[in-house]
Image 1 (cartoon, one colour):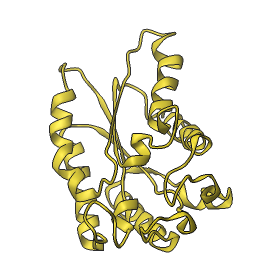
Image 2 (image 1 turned 135 degrees about the vertical axis):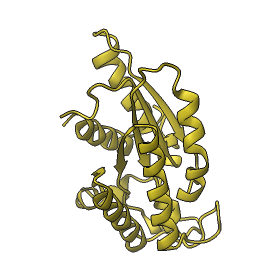
Image 3 (image 1 turned 90 degrees about the horizontal axis):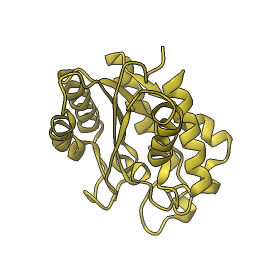
Image 4 (image 1 turned 180 degrees about the vertical axis):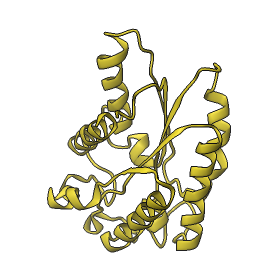
Length: 208
């Protein structure tokens, strides 16, 4: 069943990749919104609204503090049905990320993911996670990103999703095979071609 079935609002919570940094077309979240408009809203009687709540530098425990208020704010009609997409973890994996200056511990990270899921379920949302994407340490300007650490945190996300029966899009392994780090502007952020790849995979995941 398509994850887009019977929903009328998509809320995307994430970091600077969700925000769309370095993409002239607004990142994969903006591309998803355009796709939804063109396929569903312009040619049908549907009105699926897409909200981008990506904040550069975001880490999981900060996200927990804002998700519920955004869900409440966006629920304007009793019949609203939300699909919530969580895309977080890359900054948590970085030992000197610029938001908290330290790596999130495994226990704190997993606890935050469980809280995010709990909030979503409390508000009867359909919940999915988007897995982490590879990094390119050679393009870093001081942040200590490594693919070993990103892969480890991606595994934590997978474990929590399995534990809670939440669907997750696995990106890391397949994007490594595509040499995704070569389309990064810096250590983390994809260029427009990279965001196009992400948007296509996320659309396929949501519609499958």
